[in-house]
Image (cartoon, rainbow, N blue to C red; front, top):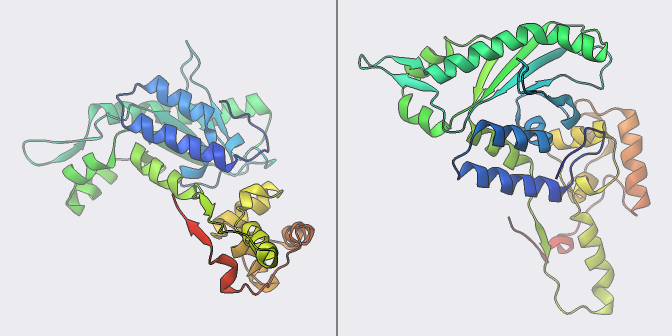
Length: 294
């Protein structure tokens, strides 16, 4: 399964399959190429997990054989003059991040230091490389470096004292973060909509329409036609289903950061085509037959 870099957002099925694959990889002994391949095939895992607002097409895989370059670079490709850019370096999930010496001093491991130096070197050349590659001009100089390696369990075991944590943080460049694999997994898992099952008793004619409405209201916003901007704005506002959306008023929607009149008009049109509208009052009976499972 390959995700193509275009404006199409991943479906719920793609997200769930990626989560299953991610979880399976975490239980196995893996090498760097396996993770490079996974993130290349599922760029939305990174775009949804990194502590930046990115879209799948913003993640560009590199790491070509014989080339000295980072595993991935990223920048907002839909913005004519991107305000930031960065590099992602992938290391093994079993890589050690820190070492505690006999004198009880926490230091970065050799693997971590090597990864950081590689990422810093790559980052210094990314801006020029992107400008040549895509002929674009950057407005800002903000750059970010993410090193994906290790697991948080190692950090909580070795750096239980906040003093140790601060000691390690002070050794990292200000624009660099080390992201353990399970940290990324948890952030991605939070973005995957849970499965919704409709428990339907024997249907009678009089409650058929209510059942249909209940099923419609439980649809995820992933299943409706929205622009990328509208979709991401709703997601960032924790609006995941139509039932959560239709209960909002126009005023509440326009108060959401990044949600403008164009997005509002689009939402109203989409809802109208489904027989819905904003500021709906939902009776509890609409959802009594629904059960959420993971």
